[in-house]
Amino acid sequence: MFAVIEIGGHQYKVEEGQTLYVNRLDANEGDKIQIGEVLLIDRDGDVEIGTPHLNAKVEATVLEHLKDKKVIVFKKKRRKGYRVKKGHRQHLTKLKIDAIKA
Image (cartoon, rainbow, N blue to C red):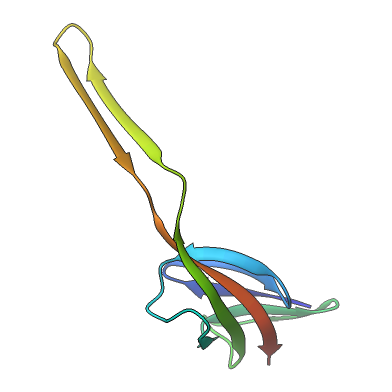
């Protein structure tokens, strides 16, 4: 059984017991959260598709808040002497999917 959920404008395919990284959520570590934006549920071949959402919930636990690997952004214009180097680290939240309730 799996579900497709939407968090922060991104869609994720999740199963029970799975851990995933999403953009930083406004919740404390150890909190239980419910995600109501369920787009699709597959129960062993029996598929329900929402228009746009289903009347279902996905329960998850916030495991930790962390930062992703550094991404280097380097811009250059040849023969002009223009060079800019910037770094960025995305803030993430690690979630563990506890249950899919339909």
